[in-house]
Image (cartoon, rainbow, N blue to C red; front, side, top):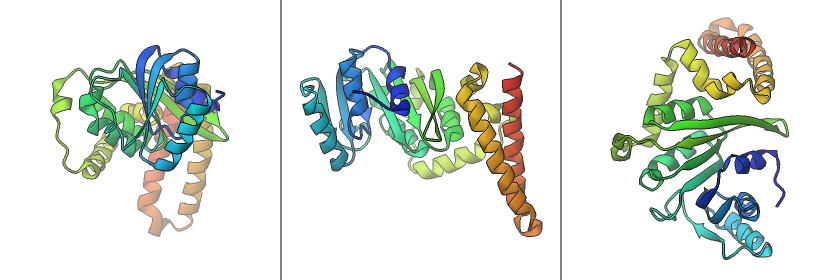
Length: 256
């Protein structure tokens, strides 16, 4: 099974395992590649939508892997039994949804030796919340495919029992509070959360390109807002603050 750049990076982040849960498996390509390449013995591929799961089933059967890749319909980790997997992949979805899936499945992931995340929005919030929960980032990379940039990380669940006993009745309200808390972080920490400490320390080539494009985008927004300063003063201030954090990230890369 040949994968595109993004999914290849996701699959490449997986270390040897007995059984991995592919949460939001879509058409099952990553699950198939991992089994075909003898990285994982068995996959449990889950998706909340019947359509993609039917396509995944057809692809798995075409590859003759029905005995090693099990397809299950359901949201997040709900179709996965506690103790039957030693790792998970959560890829191709928004950051807030990925965080909710991790939280709701916290009892099932506590013994996992690896969780691969490829989330596509609010990455600063994702890193901040994961840090607060006690997750440890083993590795983070970034790739570019078709002009879009994708951070991919391998994380370990927290050892602290507090996370598994945590109660969050309103998850959206919790994330809103965390977004406000993130803004209060010192500039250096905010920079690391926004752009990824490991990516900055490694001098990720994809991150260098991404920062250049982000600088152009933010500068363009600022220029438009300045034309009607009185009406857009608050928003312009936010954009300038974002530019300051971005310039700090560029400074970190140059000072490596």
